[in-house]
Amino acid sequence: MTTTRSPLTTDLLRALRPHQVLTHLSERLSYRYDAIQFGVTPLAVVLPETTADVVAAVRAAKAAGIPIIGRGAASGLSGGVTPLQESLVISFTRMTNLHIFPQRRGAVAQPGVVTLKVSEAAKPHGLMYPPDPASFRTSTIGGNLGENAGGPMCFKYGVTGDYVKAMEFVDVDGDVHRLTRDCYDLAGLLIGSEGTLGLITEATLRLIAPPKFSCTLMAHFAEVGQAAEAVSSAIAAGAVPSKLEFMDRACTNAVEDYMHLGLPREAEAVLLVDTDGNDSQVVDAELELVAQACGAAGGTVRRATTPAEADALWQARRSISPSLGRIRPQRMNEDIVVPRSSLPDVVREIRALGDASPFQLVQFGHIGDGNLHPNIMFDPRTESSEAVHELAREIALVAIRHGGVLSGEHGIGTMKKDFMRDAVDPVTLEVLRDVKRGLDAGNWLNPGKILPEAVSPSTLAGDS
Ligand SMILES: Cc1cc2nc3c(=O)[nH]c(=O)nc-3n(C[C@H](O)[C@H](O)[C@H](O)COP(=O)(O)OP(=O)(O)OC[C@H]3O[C@@H](n4cnc5c(N)ncnc54)[C@H](O)[C@@H]3O)c2cc1C
Image 1 (tube, helix red, strand yellow):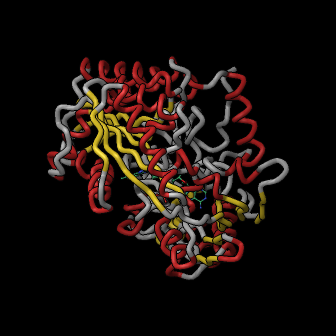
Image 2 (image 1 turned 180 degrees about the horizontal axis):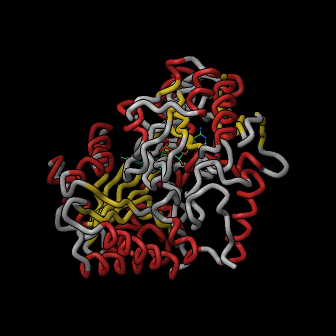
Image 3 (image 1 turned 30 degrees about the horizontal axis):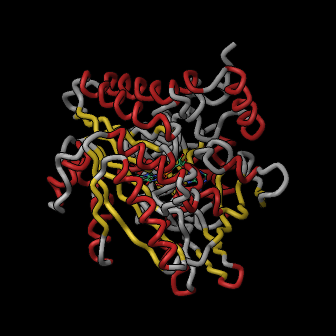
């Protein structure tokens, strides 16, 4: 049967307009995956345009006993939007209202607004929106809030959650709440909750004045530990780069094979660094601090002398995803965060894991935050996904052993939920379950994500 007719779809078609409810198989199929994973084809898909539409959809799903998954652009890298059973997907891509309030240095966005649109709309008012996930051309504000997305600029400017002043969300009963960030920061709780606690239907965002000047350098190193040392000493010396990115040798070579930018193929590590601010001399002096730290650690430094040269260097960073796509058809993109002081050991240990496995491992990341993205390259047609998962677990265990965490910005989703028992002590895990029970006792919202339990609604059993 290609078109679903069920009490749920009947209710949805009664409460919403026909073009907002997708029931035909050909329409539903593409709502079963995100950027890394396929799941179960949803029973129905709803395309709300207003908060009232979301309320109607949530109430219909709850009445029919069907789990609910909020979905943005599905660019997520942890399986956050993949349905694990027959579900209702609420896709926010038609909720795209965006208003800029220059006097308040703020914006009010519906969840389906594409991240880049906020920056574009802010620019004519002399304002900027700093959160800059590499997926900013496709990802949505709702998805960014769902994952608390970061990007190259997050070391200096912070992540998505740092720019949320208030929000509106619909709870599992279909009630609408407006939250600010004062007492019991409930908005903060929803940020990064991957659609498991409520559905965000509007966000009030903070905008800032953009810096007037920036400058850029690339440094390359014969040994990965030297790059990490350079980062630590530059920061200890007082530099706060606006961007601070790391690429290992495999990553640099993948980009060079694709883009031919003249990157140093022999280098074990490459750093790309920007400093910015309103005083050009200060910006320049700050980059010089970084250059000196890189030189002292044994690196070779190349400063960009023109904006075009700076842009060419950053093109290398922007090209990582398409470059890796040419190596193998699929990759599992890990997202660990470790203390900066552990970076040399962590990068080496992860490389050793890759060398001992049948898979190619590529590493890059926002090194200023200690956020690394080891990518396991594989072909799902010929290589075992269990072996990929096992290697991902070993990488997670390296991070945990060094006092790190499972996710910097991509979330836990389904990809890392099995590692939660390794990363979070049993008492704290139970507190997380209490939070989920407090807002969604029946486990109707995105069940099977984050917490390491079975998938079905009402299964929120503890470890005991
Ligand atoms: C090439 C590439 C590069 C990337 N680079 C980065 C990067 O630099 N930094 C980074 O942080 N991420 C990055 N990502 C990951 C991804 O783009 C981000 O996680 C992004 O925030 C997801 O946005 P989305 O709209 O696609 O959300 P989706 O993938 O659709 O959803 C993500 C999560 O948010 C939940 N959600 C969606 N909308 C709502 C809502 N309205 N209310 C409540 N929950 C909701 C979903 O249920 C899901 O759990 C990258 C992905 C790709 C493919």
